[in-house]
Amino acid sequence: MTGLDETPGTTGSRGSRLLGCVALASLGVLGVLAFVLTGPDVRIHPTTGEEFGQFDAVRMLYLHVPMAILMYASFLLCAVASVGVLVKRTPWWDVMAHSTAEIGTVLCGLVLVTGSIWGRPVWNTWWEWGDVRLMTTLVLFLLFAGYLALRSTTSDPRRQERQAAVVALVAVLDIPLVNRSVAWWENRTLHQRSTLEELKIEDLTLFTLMFGFLTFGLVVWWLTLQRFRVGWLERAAIDHAVGSAIAERRSETSAVELDAAIGVPGDPAGEESP
Amino acid sequence: MTHLGYLIAGWGISLVVLGGYALRLVRRGRSLSAEVPEDRRRWLESPGTDRD
Amino acid sequence: MSEVRRFLGDAGLVAARDLRIEFRSRVVVGQVVPFALLVLVLFGFALDADHRTLRMFASGLFWVAVLLSALLAVHRSAALELSDGTLDALRMSGLPPAALFLGKATAVFVQLMLLEVVLLGGLLVLYGVQVVDPMLLLVSGLLAGVAVAAAGTLYGALASGLGVRETLLPILLLPVLAPVLIGATRAFDDALGSVAVDGWAWTGLLAVAALIATVVGALAHGVLIED
Image (cartoon, rainbow over all chains, first blue to last red; front, side, top):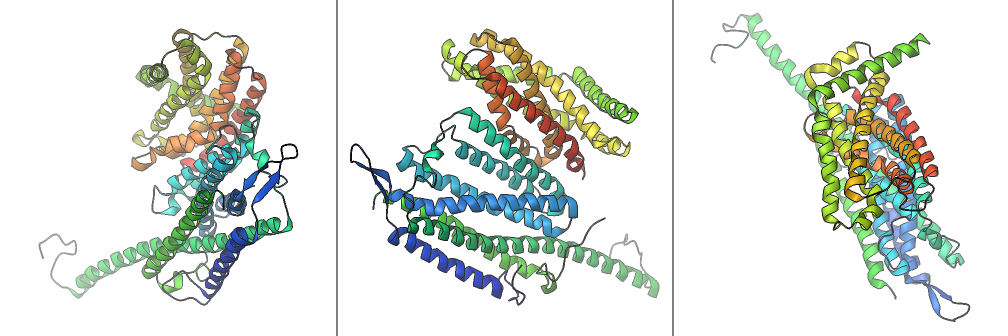
Protein backbone atom coordinates (compact mmCIF):
# COMPACT_ATOMS: atom_id res chain seq x y z
CA MET A 1 0.00 0.00 0.00
CA THR A 2 1.11 3.59 -0.29
CA GLY A 3 3.70 5.64 1.54
CA LEU A 4 7.09 4.42 2.59
CA ASP A 5 8.22 7.26 4.82
CA GLU A 6 6.42 6.80 8.06
CA THR A 7 6.04 8.70 11.20
CA PRO A 8 6.73 6.08 13.79
CA GLY A 9 3.91 5.77 16.24
CA THR A 10 0.93 6.17 13.93
CA THR A 11 -0.61 4.38 11.01
CA GLY A 12 -0.24 7.52 8.94
CA SER A 13 2.19 8.00 6.11
CA ARG A 14 2.79 10.77 3.62
CA GLY A 15 0.72 8.93 1.05
CA SER A 16 -2.19 8.19 3.32
CA ARG A 17 -2.23 11.74 4.70
CA LEU A 18 -2.42 13.07 1.16
CA LEU A 19 -5.20 10.62 0.36
CA GLY A 20 -7.07 11.65 3.47
CA CYS A 21 -6.84 15.35 2.65
CA VAL A 22 -7.99 14.83 -0.92
CA ALA A 23 -10.88 12.70 0.31
CA LEU A 24 -11.98 15.35 2.77
CA ALA A 25 -11.74 18.08 0.15
CA SER A 26 -13.73 15.95 -2.24
CA LEU A 27 -16.35 15.44 0.44
CA GLY A 28 -16.62 19.19 0.81
CA VAL A 29 -17.07 19.68 -2.92
CA LEU A 30 -19.69 16.92 -2.95
CA GLY A 31 -21.59 18.70 -0.22
CA VAL A 32 -21.67 21.87 -2.25
CA LEU A 33 -22.75 20.00 -5.36
CA ALA A 34 -25.39 18.01 -3.56
CA PHE A 35 -26.95 20.82 -1.58
CA VAL A 36 -26.29 24.04 -3.43
CA LEU A 37 -25.61 23.53 -7.10
CA THR A 38 -28.13 20.82 -7.90
CA GLY A 39 -31.85 21.29 -7.70
CA PRO A 40 -34.63 19.17 -6.23
CA ASP A 41 -36.33 16.49 -8.27
CA VAL A 42 -39.59 18.12 -9.32
CA ARG A 43 -41.79 16.87 -12.10
CA ILE A 44 -45.15 18.02 -13.41
CA HIS A 45 -47.89 15.45 -13.75
CA PRO A 46 -49.00 15.36 -17.43
CA THR A 47 -52.73 15.35 -16.70
CA THR A 48 -53.31 16.94 -13.32
CA GLY A 49 -50.52 19.49 -13.61
CA GLU A 50 -49.47 18.81 -10.03
CA GLU A 51 -45.90 18.81 -8.94
CA PHE A 52 -44.55 15.46 -7.86
CA GLY A 53 -41.24 13.72 -7.46
CA GLN A 54 -38.67 13.24 -4.76
CA PHE A 55 -38.15 16.98 -4.24
CA ASP A 56 -35.13 17.51 -2.05
CA ALA A 57 -34.97 13.92 -0.87
CA VAL A 58 -33.04 13.16 -4.05
CA ARG A 59 -30.02 14.77 -2.37
CA MET A 60 -29.83 11.69 -0.17
CA LEU A 61 -29.09 9.56 -3.19
CA TYR A 62 -25.76 11.28 -3.76
CA LEU A 63 -24.78 9.59 -0.52
CA HIS A 64 -26.75 6.36 -0.62
CA VAL A 65 -25.98 5.13 -4.12
CA PRO A 66 -22.17 5.59 -4.00
CA MET A 67 -22.03 3.90 -0.60
CA ALA A 68 -24.03 0.97 -1.94
CA ILE A 69 -21.68 0.48 -4.88
CA LEU A 70 -18.62 0.68 -2.66
CA MET A 71 -20.22 -1.74 -0.22
CA TYR A 72 -20.52 -4.32 -2.99
CA ALA A 73 -16.94 -3.62 -4.02
CA SER A 74 -15.72 -4.17 -0.45
CA PHE A 75 -17.54 -7.45 -0.09
CA LEU A 76 -16.25 -8.59 -3.45
CA LEU A 77 -12.72 -7.77 -2.35
CA CYS A 78 -13.39 -9.72 0.84
CA ALA A 79 -14.42 -12.74 -1.18
CA VAL A 80 -11.28 -12.50 -3.31
CA ALA A 81 -9.13 -12.07 -0.21
CA SER A 82 -10.82 -15.06 1.42
CA VAL A 83 -9.90 -17.18 -1.56
CA GLY A 84 -6.39 -15.83 -1.10
CA VAL A 85 -6.41 -16.94 2.53
CA LEU A 86 -7.40 -20.46 1.58
CA VAL A 87 -4.98 -20.73 -1.31
CA LYS A 88 -1.97 -18.66 -0.25
CA ARG A 89 -2.20 -18.65 3.52
CA THR A 90 -0.20 -15.48 4.05
CA PRO A 91 -1.22 -12.94 6.69
CA TRP A 92 -1.62 -10.24 4.05
CA TRP A 93 -4.68 -11.95 2.56
CA ASP A 94 -6.24 -12.52 5.93
CA VAL A 95 -5.81 -8.94 7.11
CA MET A 96 -7.21 -7.83 3.77
CA ALA A 97 -10.24 -10.10 4.17
CA HIS A 98 -10.97 -8.92 7.68
CA SER A 99 -10.51 -5.25 6.79
CA THR A 100 -12.71 -5.28 3.72
CA ALA A 101 -15.37 -7.26 5.57
CA GLU A 102 -15.47 -4.72 8.36
CA ILE A 103 -15.57 -1.71 6.04
CA GLY A 104 -18.21 -3.41 3.92
CA THR A 105 -20.38 -4.10 6.93
CA VAL A 106 -20.17 -0.50 8.14
CA LEU A 107 -21.14 0.70 4.66
CA CYS A 108 -23.93 -1.86 4.49
CA GLY A 109 -25.40 -0.64 7.75
CA LEU A 110 -25.25 2.94 6.50
CA VAL A 111 -26.83 1.95 3.18
CA LEU A 112 -29.74 0.37 5.04
CA VAL A 113 -30.14 3.40 7.30
CA THR A 114 -29.85 6.04 4.58
CA GLY A 115 -32.07 3.99 2.31
CA SER A 116 -34.73 3.78 4.99
CA ILE A 117 -34.49 7.50 5.73
CA TRP A 118 -34.78 8.22 2.02
CA GLY A 119 -37.66 5.81 1.63
CA ARG A 120 -39.84 7.43 4.26
CA PRO A 121 -40.62 10.66 2.40
CA VAL A 122 -40.42 9.11 -1.06
CA TRP A 123 -42.19 5.74 -0.69
CA ASN A 124 -44.02 6.69 2.48
CA THR A 125 -42.60 3.80 4.45
CA TRP A 126 -39.49 3.14 6.51
CA TRP A 127 -39.23 -0.45 5.38
CA GLU A 128 -40.82 -2.75 2.81
CA TRP A 129 -40.75 -6.53 3.07
CA GLY A 130 -40.50 -8.19 -0.30
CA ASP A 131 -38.45 -5.54 -2.01
CA VAL A 132 -35.55 -7.35 -3.61
CA ARG A 133 -32.74 -4.97 -2.95
CA LEU A 134 -33.79 -4.18 0.61
CA MET A 135 -34.03 -7.82 1.58
CA THR A 136 -30.80 -8.81 -0.10
CA THR A 137 -28.95 -5.94 1.55
CA LEU A 138 -30.42 -6.86 4.93
CA VAL A 139 -29.38 -10.49 4.61
CA LEU A 140 -25.96 -9.38 3.37
CA PHE A 141 -25.59 -7.26 6.49
CA LEU A 142 -26.58 -10.17 8.73
CA LEU A 143 -24.21 -12.54 6.96
CA PHE A 144 -21.20 -10.32 7.40
CA ALA A 145 -22.18 -9.28 10.92
CA GLY A 146 -21.93 -12.99 11.62
CA TYR A 147 -18.50 -13.08 10.00
CA LEU A 148 -17.32 -10.23 12.21
CA ALA A 149 -18.83 -11.91 15.26
CA LEU A 150 -16.86 -15.06 14.47
CA ARG A 151 -13.64 -13.11 14.14
CA SER A 152 -14.21 -11.37 17.44
CA THR A 153 -14.40 -14.63 19.37
CA THR A 154 -10.65 -14.79 19.55
CA SER A 155 -7.97 -12.16 19.73
CA ASP A 156 -5.55 -14.28 17.73
CA PRO A 157 -6.62 -14.08 14.09
CA ARG A 158 -4.45 -16.94 12.98
CA ARG A 159 -6.61 -19.43 14.84
CA GLN A 160 -9.60 -18.93 12.63
CA GLU A 161 -8.49 -17.26 9.45
CA ARG A 162 -9.35 -20.23 7.25
CA GLN A 163 -12.66 -20.80 8.97
CA ALA A 164 -13.55 -17.14 8.61
CA ALA A 165 -12.60 -17.33 4.93
CA VAL A 166 -15.07 -20.18 4.44
CA VAL A 167 -17.79 -18.20 6.20
CA ALA A 168 -17.12 -15.19 3.98
CA LEU A 169 -17.23 -17.29 0.81
CA VAL A 170 -20.44 -19.06 1.86
CA ALA A 171 -21.94 -15.64 2.55
CA VAL A 172 -21.02 -14.36 -0.89
CA LEU A 173 -22.27 -17.55 -2.56
CA ASP A 174 -25.54 -17.24 -0.71
CA ILE A 175 -26.30 -13.81 -2.07
CA PRO A 176 -27.47 -14.84 -5.55
CA LEU A 177 -29.69 -17.43 -3.90
CA VAL A 178 -31.20 -14.83 -1.60
CA ASN A 179 -31.60 -12.46 -4.52
CA ARG A 180 -33.46 -14.98 -6.65
CA SER A 181 -35.71 -16.12 -3.86
CA VAL A 182 -36.76 -12.61 -2.89
CA ALA A 183 -37.18 -11.57 -6.53
CA TRP A 184 -39.63 -14.41 -7.05
CA TRP A 185 -41.31 -13.82 -3.77
CA GLU A 186 -43.31 -10.69 -4.36
CA ASN A 187 -43.43 -8.61 -7.44
CA ARG A 188 -43.55 -5.49 -5.42
CA THR A 189 -40.16 -4.03 -6.14
CA LEU A 190 -40.26 -0.48 -4.99
CA HIS A 191 -36.69 -0.10 -6.08
CA GLN A 192 -37.80 -0.18 -9.68
CA ARG A 193 -39.35 3.19 -9.20
CA SER A 194 -36.09 4.67 -8.13
CA THR A 195 -33.70 3.61 -10.86
CA LEU A 196 -31.46 6.16 -12.47
CA GLU A 197 -33.74 6.43 -15.47
CA GLU A 198 -36.54 7.61 -13.24
CA LEU A 199 -34.67 10.64 -12.02
CA LYS A 200 -34.64 13.66 -14.20
CA ILE A 201 -31.08 13.08 -15.17
CA GLU A 202 -29.78 16.41 -16.14
CA ASP A 203 -26.05 16.67 -16.55
CA LEU A 204 -25.41 18.10 -13.12
CA THR A 205 -27.35 15.39 -11.29
CA LEU A 206 -25.48 12.66 -13.11
CA PHE A 207 -22.20 14.45 -12.56
CA THR A 208 -22.88 14.78 -8.85
CA LEU A 209 -23.69 11.11 -8.62
CA MET A 210 -20.44 10.21 -10.35
CA PHE A 211 -18.54 12.67 -8.21
CA GLY A 212 -20.14 11.11 -5.16
CA PHE A 213 -18.86 7.76 -6.30
CA LEU A 214 -15.38 9.19 -6.70
CA THR A 215 -15.52 10.88 -3.30
CA PHE A 216 -16.64 7.84 -1.42
CA GLY A 217 -14.17 5.79 -3.37
CA LEU A 218 -11.41 7.93 -1.89
CA VAL A 219 -12.94 7.83 1.59
CA VAL A 220 -13.31 4.05 1.50
CA TRP A 221 -9.80 3.65 0.12
CA TRP A 222 -8.41 5.69 3.02
CA LEU A 223 -10.51 3.76 5.56
CA THR A 224 -9.51 0.39 4.14
CA LEU A 225 -5.87 1.41 4.15
CA GLN A 226 -6.04 2.48 7.80
CA ARG A 227 -7.99 -0.61 8.78
CA PHE A 228 -5.48 -2.81 7.00
CA ARG A 229 -2.60 -1.19 8.84
CA VAL A 230 -4.38 -1.57 12.16
CA GLY A 231 -5.02 -5.23 11.37
CA TRP A 232 -1.40 -5.72 10.40
CA LEU A 233 -0.28 -4.10 13.64
CA GLU A 234 -2.59 -6.34 15.62
CA ARG A 235 -0.94 -9.42 14.21
CA ALA A 236 2.51 -7.94 14.68
CA ALA A 237 1.65 -7.14 18.29
CA ILE A 238 0.58 -10.72 18.95
CA ASP A 239 3.66 -12.10 17.24
CA HIS A 240 5.81 -9.71 19.19
CA ALA A 241 4.17 -10.61 22.48
CA VAL A 242 4.57 -14.30 21.80
CA GLY A 243 8.12 -13.82 20.63
CA SER A 244 9.21 -11.85 23.67
CA ALA A 245 7.48 -14.28 26.01
CA ILE A 246 9.49 -17.08 24.47
CA ALA A 247 12.69 -15.06 24.68
CA GLU A 248 11.99 -14.33 28.32
CA ARG A 249 11.52 -17.99 29.10
CA ARG A 250 14.74 -18.80 27.35
CA SER A 251 16.68 -16.21 29.30
CA GLU A 252 15.20 -17.46 32.58
CA THR A 253 16.37 -20.97 31.82
CA SER A 254 19.86 -19.87 30.85
CA ALA A 255 20.27 -17.98 34.14
CA VAL A 256 19.57 -21.19 36.04
CA GLU A 257 21.86 -23.22 33.82
CA LEU A 258 24.58 -20.62 34.26
CA ASP A 259 24.37 -20.90 38.03
CA ALA A 260 24.57 -24.65 37.82
CA ALA A 261 27.59 -24.49 35.54
CA ILE A 262 29.46 -22.10 37.80
CA GLY A 263 28.72 -24.37 40.70
CA VAL A 264 26.57 -22.06 42.70
CA PRO A 265 25.12 -24.21 45.47
CA GLY A 266 21.44 -24.58 45.06
CA ASP A 267 18.91 -26.67 43.25
CA PRO A 268 18.53 -26.22 39.54
CA ALA A 269 14.87 -27.16 39.80
CA GLY A 270 14.23 -24.41 42.29
CA GLU A 271 12.45 -26.58 44.79
CA GLU A 272 14.00 -25.23 47.93
CA SER A 273 12.87 -21.90 49.24
CA PRO A 274 15.02 -18.91 48.10
CA MET B 1 -35.75 22.92 1.47
CA THR B 2 -38.30 20.11 1.66
CA HIS B 3 -37.59 17.00 3.73
CA LEU B 4 -34.79 18.86 5.45
CA GLY B 5 -35.05 16.78 8.61
CA TYR B 6 -34.56 13.56 6.67
CA LEU B 7 -31.60 14.99 4.80
CA ILE B 8 -29.90 16.13 7.98
CA ALA B 9 -30.57 12.75 9.60
CA GLY B 10 -29.27 10.75 6.64
CA TRP B 11 -26.18 12.79 5.88
CA GLY B 12 -25.56 13.44 9.56
CA ILE B 13 -25.65 9.82 10.63
CA SER B 14 -23.43 8.78 7.73
CA LEU B 15 -20.79 11.42 8.33
CA VAL B 16 -20.80 10.87 12.09
CA VAL B 17 -20.47 7.10 11.75
CA LEU B 18 -17.74 7.29 9.11
CA GLY B 19 -15.92 10.02 11.02
CA GLY B 20 -16.17 8.14 14.28
CA TYR B 21 -14.93 4.96 12.67
CA ALA B 22 -12.00 6.83 11.14
CA LEU B 23 -11.13 8.31 14.51
CA ARG B 24 -11.27 4.93 16.16
CA LEU B 25 -8.93 3.49 13.54
CA VAL B 26 -6.40 6.27 13.94
CA ARG B 27 -6.45 5.97 17.72
CA ARG B 28 -6.11 2.21 17.62
CA GLY B 29 -3.29 2.60 15.15
CA ARG B 30 -1.44 4.86 17.53
CA SER B 31 -1.81 2.60 20.54
CA LEU B 32 -0.80 -0.51 18.58
CA SER B 33 2.20 1.23 17.06
CA ALA B 34 3.46 1.83 20.57
CA GLU B 35 3.43 -1.91 21.28
CA VAL B 36 5.14 -3.02 18.13
CA PRO B 37 8.84 -2.55 17.31
CA GLU B 38 9.47 -0.18 14.44
CA ASP B 39 10.61 -2.71 11.89
CA ARG B 40 7.41 -4.72 12.13
CA ARG B 41 4.96 -1.88 11.65
CA ARG B 42 4.41 -2.11 7.93
CA TRP B 43 3.73 -5.09 5.73
CA LEU B 44 6.32 -3.80 3.29
CA GLU B 45 9.05 -4.27 5.86
CA SER B 46 7.99 -7.65 7.10
CA PRO B 47 6.25 -9.63 4.38
CA GLY B 48 3.99 -12.40 5.54
CA THR B 49 5.44 -15.82 5.94
CA ASP B 50 4.02 -18.70 4.00
CA ARG B 51 3.21 -21.62 6.20
CA ASP B 52 3.70 -25.29 5.33
CA MET C 1 -15.90 -47.44 -7.67
CA SER C 2 -14.85 -49.18 -4.51
CA GLU C 3 -13.48 -45.86 -3.25
CA VAL C 4 -16.93 -44.37 -3.53
CA ARG C 5 -18.37 -47.36 -1.75
CA ARG C 6 -15.82 -47.02 1.03
CA PHE C 7 -16.55 -43.32 1.28
CA LEU C 8 -20.27 -43.93 1.53
CA GLY C 9 -19.60 -46.71 3.98
CA ASP C 10 -17.63 -44.36 6.18
CA ALA C 11 -20.38 -41.79 6.03
CA GLY C 12 -22.90 -44.47 6.85
CA LEU C 13 -20.91 -45.52 9.88
CA VAL C 14 -20.83 -41.97 11.19
CA ALA C 15 -24.55 -41.52 10.56
CA ALA C 16 -25.34 -44.81 12.25
CA ARG C 17 -23.21 -43.88 15.24
CA ASP C 18 -24.89 -40.50 15.63
CA LEU C 19 -28.35 -42.00 15.30
CA ARG C 20 -27.52 -44.75 17.73
CA ILE C 21 -26.38 -42.20 20.28
CA GLU C 22 -29.60 -40.30 19.70
CA PHE C 23 -31.64 -43.47 20.07
CA ARG C 24 -30.03 -44.13 23.42
CA SER C 25 -30.00 -40.60 24.76
CA ARG C 26 -33.24 -39.43 23.18
CA VAL C 27 -32.22 -35.79 23.17
CA VAL C 28 -33.98 -34.89 19.94
CA VAL C 29 -37.07 -36.93 20.63
CA GLY C 30 -37.27 -35.97 24.25
CA GLN C 31 -36.24 -32.30 24.10
CA VAL C 32 -36.08 -30.84 20.63
CA VAL C 33 -39.42 -32.12 19.35
CA PRO C 34 -41.31 -30.93 22.44
CA PHE C 35 -39.57 -27.57 22.02
CA ALA C 36 -40.83 -27.34 18.46
CA LEU C 37 -44.37 -28.17 19.50
CA LEU C 38 -44.06 -25.62 22.26
CA VAL C 39 -43.12 -22.98 19.68
CA LEU C 40 -46.29 -23.81 17.75
CA VAL C 41 -48.32 -23.51 20.93
CA LEU C 42 -46.69 -20.19 21.81
CA PHE C 43 -47.54 -18.84 18.40
CA GLY C 44 -51.10 -19.94 19.00
CA PHE C 45 -51.22 -17.95 22.22
CA ALA C 46 -49.48 -14.93 20.77
CA LEU C 47 -51.59 -14.71 17.61
CA ASP C 48 -54.83 -14.96 19.50
CA ALA C 49 -55.74 -18.48 18.40
CA ASP C 50 -58.14 -17.83 15.54
CA HIS C 51 -58.17 -20.86 13.24
CA ARG C 52 -58.39 -18.82 10.10
CA THR C 53 -55.42 -16.64 11.04
CA LEU C 54 -53.39 -19.63 12.06
CA ARG C 55 -54.14 -21.44 8.82
CA MET C 56 -52.99 -18.42 6.87
CA PHE C 57 -49.67 -18.26 8.65
CA ALA C 58 -49.29 -21.96 9.31
CA SER C 59 -46.49 -22.63 6.86
CA GLY C 60 -44.43 -19.68 8.04
CA LEU C 61 -44.88 -20.64 11.67
CA PHE C 62 -44.05 -24.23 10.82
CA TRP C 63 -40.75 -23.35 9.21
CA VAL C 64 -39.73 -20.89 11.90
CA ALA C 65 -40.33 -23.62 14.45
CA VAL C 66 -38.29 -26.07 12.34
CA LEU C 67 -35.38 -23.63 12.00
CA LEU C 68 -35.24 -22.82 15.69
CA SER C 69 -35.39 -26.49 16.60
CA ALA C 70 -32.80 -27.32 13.98
CA LEU C 71 -30.40 -25.03 15.85
CA LEU C 72 -30.73 -27.30 18.86
CA ALA C 73 -30.38 -30.47 16.84
CA VAL C 74 -27.29 -29.21 15.03
CA HIS C 75 -25.71 -27.98 18.21
CA ARG C 76 -26.28 -31.39 19.76
CA SER C 77 -24.77 -33.10 16.73
CA ALA C 78 -21.66 -30.95 16.88
CA ALA C 79 -21.33 -31.43 20.63
CA LEU C 80 -21.05 -35.19 20.12
CA GLU C 81 -17.60 -34.65 18.67
CA LEU C 82 -16.32 -32.65 21.57
CA SER C 83 -16.36 -35.31 24.24
CA ASP C 84 -13.19 -37.21 25.03
CA GLY C 85 -11.20 -36.24 21.98
CA THR C 86 -13.59 -37.96 19.62
CA LEU C 87 -12.84 -35.51 16.86
CA ASP C 88 -9.10 -36.03 17.09
CA ALA C 89 -9.59 -39.77 17.02
CA LEU C 90 -11.75 -39.48 13.92
CA ARG C 91 -9.26 -37.24 12.20
CA MET C 92 -6.36 -39.51 12.94
CA SER C 93 -8.27 -42.55 11.80
CA GLY C 94 -8.01 -41.25 8.27
CA LEU C 95 -11.72 -40.66 7.92
CA PRO C 96 -12.13 -38.07 5.15
CA PRO C 97 -13.75 -34.91 6.51
CA ALA C 98 -16.31 -35.02 3.71
CA ALA C 99 -17.46 -38.44 4.87
CA LEU C 100 -17.70 -37.19 8.43
CA PHE C 101 -19.75 -34.28 7.15
CA LEU C 102 -22.06 -36.48 5.10
CA GLY C 103 -22.61 -38.88 7.97
CA LYS C 104 -23.40 -36.22 10.51
CA ALA C 105 -25.59 -34.27 8.09
CA THR C 106 -27.53 -37.44 7.31
CA ALA C 107 -28.13 -38.08 10.98
CA VAL C 108 -29.34 -34.51 11.48
CA PHE C 109 -31.52 -34.88 8.38
CA VAL C 110 -33.20 -37.97 9.79
CA GLN C 111 -33.87 -36.15 13.03
CA LEU C 112 -35.26 -33.16 11.14
CA MET C 113 -37.60 -35.42 9.18
CA LEU C 114 -38.95 -36.80 12.41
CA LEU C 115 -39.35 -33.25 13.65
CA GLU C 116 -41.21 -32.18 10.52
CA VAL C 117 -43.61 -35.10 10.72
CA VAL C 118 -44.48 -34.36 14.32
CA LEU C 119 -44.85 -30.65 13.59
CA LEU C 120 -47.09 -31.38 10.65
CA GLY C 121 -49.27 -33.36 13.00
CA GLY C 122 -49.26 -30.32 15.26
CA LEU C 123 -50.38 -28.13 12.38
CA LEU C 124 -53.20 -30.49 11.50
CA VAL C 125 -54.44 -30.75 15.04
CA LEU C 126 -53.68 -27.35 16.55
CA TYR C 127 -54.07 -25.09 13.54
CA GLY C 128 -56.62 -27.03 11.53
CA VAL C 129 -54.77 -26.97 8.24
CA GLN C 130 -55.67 -29.22 5.33
CA VAL C 131 -53.17 -30.89 3.07
CA VAL C 132 -54.11 -30.14 -0.52
CA ASP C 133 -51.00 -31.43 -2.27
CA PRO C 134 -49.26 -34.12 -0.21
CA MET C 135 -46.60 -34.81 -2.84
CA LEU C 136 -45.51 -31.19 -2.88
CA LEU C 137 -45.46 -31.20 0.90
CA LEU C 138 -43.28 -34.27 0.98
CA VAL C 139 -40.76 -33.19 -1.65
CA SER C 140 -40.35 -29.64 -0.41
CA GLY C 141 -40.13 -30.84 3.18
CA LEU C 142 -37.41 -33.29 2.21
CA LEU C 143 -35.36 -30.82 0.18
CA ALA C 144 -35.60 -28.08 2.77
CA GLY C 145 -34.56 -30.63 5.36
CA VAL C 146 -31.47 -31.52 3.34
CA ALA C 147 -30.52 -27.86 2.98
CA VAL C 148 -30.98 -27.13 6.68
CA ALA C 149 -29.15 -30.29 7.77
CA ALA C 150 -26.21 -29.65 5.42
CA ALA C 151 -25.79 -25.96 6.20
CA GLY C 152 -26.32 -26.64 9.89
CA THR C 153 -23.70 -29.39 10.02
CA LEU C 154 -21.22 -27.18 8.23
CA TYR C 155 -21.60 -24.33 10.66
CA GLY C 156 -22.11 -26.61 13.63
CA ALA C 157 -18.49 -27.67 13.37
CA LEU C 158 -17.46 -24.05 13.50
CA ALA C 159 -19.68 -22.86 16.27
CA SER C 160 -19.16 -25.69 18.67
CA GLY C 161 -16.74 -25.63 21.50
CA LEU C 162 -16.37 -23.86 24.73
CA GLY C 163 -17.64 -20.48 25.64
CA VAL C 164 -18.05 -17.69 23.17
CA ARG C 165 -18.48 -19.71 20.03
CA GLU C 166 -21.59 -21.61 21.06
CA THR C 167 -23.90 -18.67 20.62
CA LEU C 168 -22.47 -18.00 17.19
CA LEU C 169 -24.49 -20.73 15.50
CA PRO C 170 -27.80 -18.89 15.14
CA ILE C 171 -26.30 -15.68 13.76
CA LEU C 172 -24.13 -17.57 11.32
CA LEU C 173 -26.65 -20.13 10.18
CA LEU C 174 -30.00 -18.38 10.05
CA PRO C 175 -29.13 -15.61 7.56
CA VAL C 176 -27.62 -18.22 5.24
CA LEU C 177 -30.88 -20.18 5.41
CA ALA C 178 -33.06 -17.17 4.56
CA PRO C 179 -33.73 -18.39 0.99
CA VAL C 180 -34.65 -21.83 2.31
CA LEU C 181 -37.10 -20.27 4.72
CA ILE C 182 -38.68 -18.20 1.96
CA GLY C 183 -38.82 -21.10 -0.48
CA ALA C 184 -40.09 -23.72 1.94
CA THR C 185 -42.77 -21.41 3.29
CA ARG C 186 -44.05 -20.64 -0.20
CA ALA C 187 -44.03 -24.31 -1.16
CA PHE C 188 -45.99 -25.21 1.95
CA ASP C 189 -48.38 -22.33 1.31
CA ASP C 190 -49.23 -23.98 -1.97
CA ALA C 191 -49.36 -27.48 -0.54
CA LEU C 192 -51.66 -26.45 2.28
CA GLY C 193 -53.86 -24.47 -0.05
CA SER C 194 -53.54 -21.18 1.81
CA VAL C 195 -51.98 -19.02 -0.89
CA ALA C 196 -52.06 -19.29 -4.67
CA VAL C 197 -48.39 -19.65 -5.53
CA ASP C 198 -46.44 -22.06 -7.69
CA GLY C 199 -45.11 -24.36 -5.01
CA TRP C 200 -43.20 -26.57 -7.41
CA ALA C 201 -41.17 -23.63 -8.73
CA TRP C 202 -40.16 -22.87 -5.18
CA THR C 203 -39.32 -26.52 -4.66
CA GLY C 204 -36.90 -26.17 -7.55
CA LEU C 205 -35.18 -23.38 -5.66
CA LEU C 206 -35.05 -25.61 -2.60
CA ALA C 207 -33.42 -28.33 -4.68
CA VAL C 208 -30.72 -25.91 -5.78
CA ALA C 209 -30.17 -24.75 -2.21
CA ALA C 210 -29.97 -28.35 -0.98
CA LEU C 211 -27.44 -29.25 -3.66
CA ILE C 212 -25.23 -26.22 -3.02
CA ALA C 213 -25.37 -26.71 0.75
CA THR C 214 -24.35 -30.37 0.46
CA VAL C 215 -21.53 -29.78 -1.99
CA VAL C 216 -20.11 -26.74 -0.20
CA GLY C 217 -20.48 -28.48 3.14
CA ALA C 218 -18.60 -31.56 1.96
CA LEU C 219 -15.80 -29.45 0.50
CA ALA C 220 -15.47 -26.98 3.34
CA HIS C 221 -16.02 -29.18 6.36
CA GLY C 222 -12.41 -30.19 6.45
CA VAL C 223 -11.32 -26.60 6.90
CA LEU C 224 -13.81 -25.88 9.63
CA ILE C 225 -12.88 -28.73 11.91
CA GLU C 226 -9.17 -28.11 11.87
CA ASP C 227 -7.81 -26.54 14.97
